[in-house]
Image (cartoon, rainbow, N blue to C red):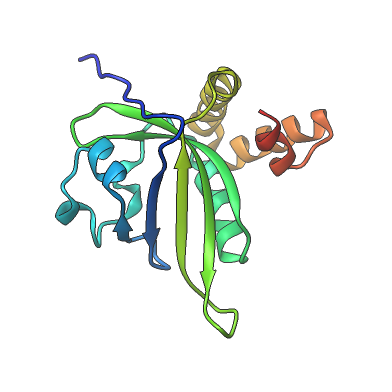
Length: 162
């Protein structure tokens, strides 16, 4: 069955907050609309309810490592909707801190990605996924590091240059 790609406006933002375990505690109207889930079916659910099978696990491994270390991360993510459609986002995920600088939750703002960036990310994610299928997450992590080394850039420099 063919599923449709959904999109949203360049000036629109998908916003959500999660607890430390990744369970959704807040989502804005655009998140609700594009995901196809009513708010009641999103709150207290793991954010990975939206995880698309085309996404390499190494992206989420890196995301969680960076967030738990108290750092922000930018990432291109393909999400699935309740009804099997999909949409791409350029996500900026940040930890939120209390007054003692302890992480209390995570905040994510997603924008519409540029087509030029997706032209690079889509085939790269396909190759990472292939590596994962044959050699596990370690193989895709090695492929990611090889790409960054070959370009002489950090992960952030690579992602933000697209």
